[in-house]
Length: 123
Image (tube, rainbow, N blue to C red; front, side, top):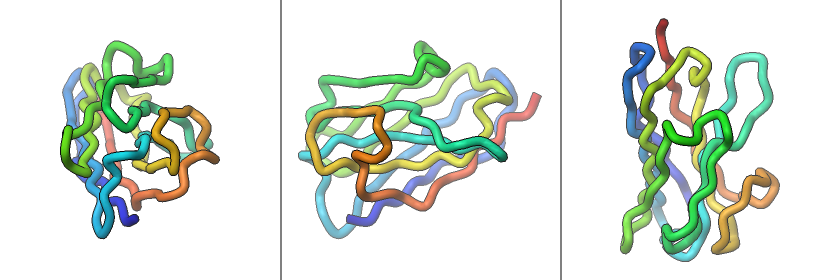
């Protein structure tokens, strides 16, 4: 499975961005997908996850209420809508897919990773 993350860019604080994670070569409709991020000098952290059907989502406390993860019903694209962005959200954002259908915050459960897309939030 190859994942392609896109949609990053420069945005002012308070603005919004929508990231996309598209899978190629193989469908991920039966797999959980997660978004992670890594800020400069910091470890990678879980941001949001969604199960195979889209019925269950999980968010890090730092983004709860501001970010929304969703997925196409019959496709291989997962989205992360980010609103009310702050400079603290600046990071490279990665999407990843798990072999399981249930969402998890554990990065070790995700086996296929995209290349990352940079989000920069200016104050």
